[in-house]
Length: 438
Image (tube, rainbow, N blue to C red):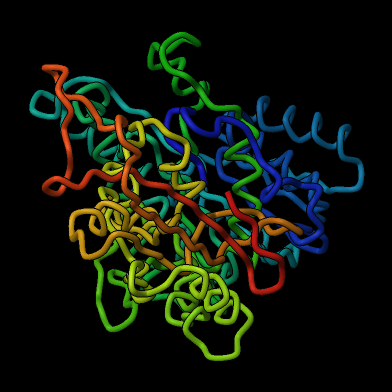
């Protein structure tokens, strides 16, 4: 995940690290448009770190692209670097590039579409038609020409832009905002029609990077909380491996337990996690989680405690966060921590997502909630993306003289003349590990 504006995760992280053997690019040829500087150059470095056999860099300025290839060859002597001067809006340059690769017998395994044009900042209504159309040629038509070449049918990684997600960018950089939005929709349409087993397409925006283009647009290091360039560079490698296939052609809707939910740009739930939402291990007789649940429930008599074991795992952001007082900038809300279907709908991250509705129902003096919960954790001996939680609450009569006080200083009994106080507990466990409580 590449969170916007660096507010949650501005640097690279272990899942996309070049040190992971699963990211190895050994034996592969990578072609990166705009690979001589900025994010393109950073992406080339990340592919080289992951042992790519050959990396083809394209760029408009011969001296710049050749220097980039030379510098990378010194740093990574085991990788072959090929510098090609090519202006991507030029159909002739694009055709010549691919023809030369065919003559060389070079088959491209991964195409990284990074090159783009920022364009003028003038309002669309006063823009020069030919000038604006040239931005469409660069950011839309040329991307299509590269994506549909018969020489590529393996992996395509498209770098969208943070401007399509950030308020006010349609005014600040209207031509760039418009053409990158169209380009992203174009690549998504191609992905929708492609079989990921033959042609995997992944689209991501690289965060906010102080690139050469950003500086040419007048930005400085103080303009935004910029991300480290290693973040999109490393992610661009991970996006081209089998592990990232679930991001290809995002489904328009997702179905869980017979209910259908729309998806949007927040969607990040892989198929194996979505499939887990229908397993309900805590309800499967003789399963360790089921047995654990029954042992705990036996300590809380159902004459006092109501058992809630069938709450739906799909909840709203209000249920999961807002109703519990989570701040809007809490890291738990980030897409790097939580599985979203859309901006307002997610897989619960804790049983407390049902706490407010249980309190409101007020059906008993105590309750227990048992459920499967979901978090985007890296798997290790104490973390797993899907696990089970149990929480409860009990009310008991308050000791004499311990009634809560109102604003006027008088005792305020609850539920008629009977006052209560509560005790809350929670426990969590995986099927293959002991439960822990807190």
